[in-house]
Length: 192
Ligand code: ZN
Image 1 (cartoon, protein in one colour):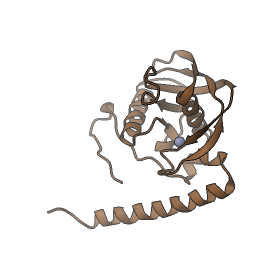
Image 2: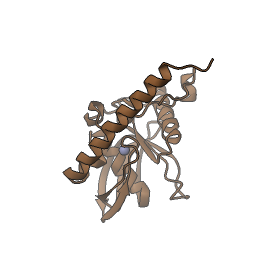
Image 3: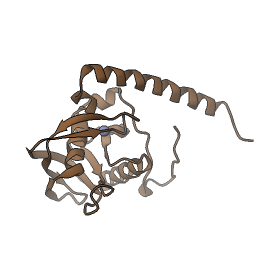
Image 4: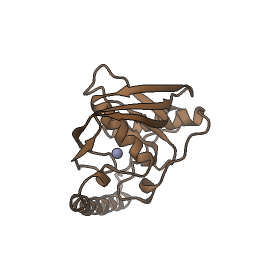
């Protein structure tokens, strides 16, 4: 689907979110060497794209950028939390177990139970390039594990049974061809 594109990069841009399966979603993202304005621009785009799609987390590879950057906003479930961007996030410890029904903006309309750790401690650089450590619980802990997985080319569908994954693959194939047909219709019509 075509989205609104703004002319000025610094105000942020809603980017197209890649749909699984896609070769970029299987690649390992590169560490960010220097946190600068381009990193902060990427973070703005990630937040704008995530909010546009009603998500609670988004990783840079999902918009085609192979850099280790993720954004999260779980305030809908955890009002005390804050929107947060993590650069080069690294999970340093996991505790407990929980089964959570997860979805993914790159697998629209699908949700499956995934076994995760209940608590995740993550080390990362903030938007100023400062090292931070955060212990996450609840949905934030799930989201951190889900989004850091994306940076290593792993999707939530890689955590479920082959049978379920192949059914989802078929539905995504149909969704992609429906979207392509919709796009072709738009290109061959105009409101005059
Ligand atoms: Zn995802």
